[in-house]
Image 1 (tube, rainbow, N blue to C red):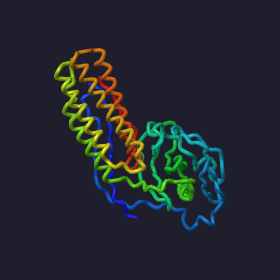
Image 2 (cartoon, helix red, strand yellow):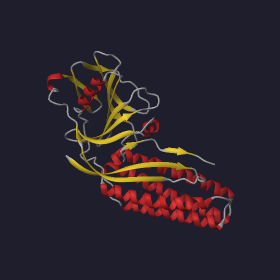
Image 3 (cartoon, rainbow, N blue to C red):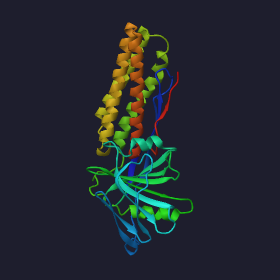
Image 4 (tube, rainbow, N blue to C red):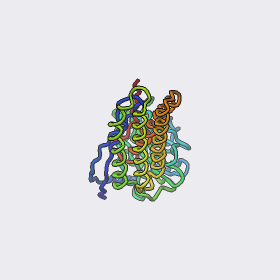
Length: 328
């Protein structure tokens, strides 16, 4: 199944108020790709070992594997988890399945994204009747093995399946992925998870224009409060408002409606913070100016986090934690 996707690599740099840095750099390219279809293969019936139940989800496992207690993986918070391990090579591999604890409309828990040690590759795969997000090379602070992670948005909750194996146990990892393909999540969303190119274009354009004006204007905010700085802050408030309007006008597909609303709110918060900065600069109120600087920092950090969330929905080739750094 061929799908044309606009892939967004959303590189986010959070800068504190005085920094002469860019909020976000956007690289967009239209790439044709075949969405992978993950199936258990013809060998599954002859290797059936049993059914693993985790909440409302059911997964079929092969002979040679058996249920075990679910290990805890930092950042991957699951409700009602269940796990499998190979009968030989104890401790070398696991399959873990459970309901993902994450804010509504998130493809990955923010806590897990924040713990990533390296970018994880993102793709959309088909489990036959429904789609899933697949994340390869998930390396988490506090856990010594890379994961392959699948998340399946549902009508009520999101299911996750994680696979890992030790060095020299890659055959277990392949088997784990085939078993993951048997997942019945108990109410998967019928929506296609393929990223929307029109929505991606709209968001890219909005953020690109905001970024261009921010790069021009931010250096002019150095120094003490003044009428000139007030004018700069007013222009930045207008830029944030324009970005918010562009995002609001975009048709967000169902998988990203919640994160779209968060992005809209955070762009509006950026506009409000810069409006407050303008007012404080005009009257040269040092206390109000400092408070507005803090509000700007917070608004931009939140925008960074929300833009990074879009990567987890396939709008980036990889998903990474927001890069944040403060400068004086």
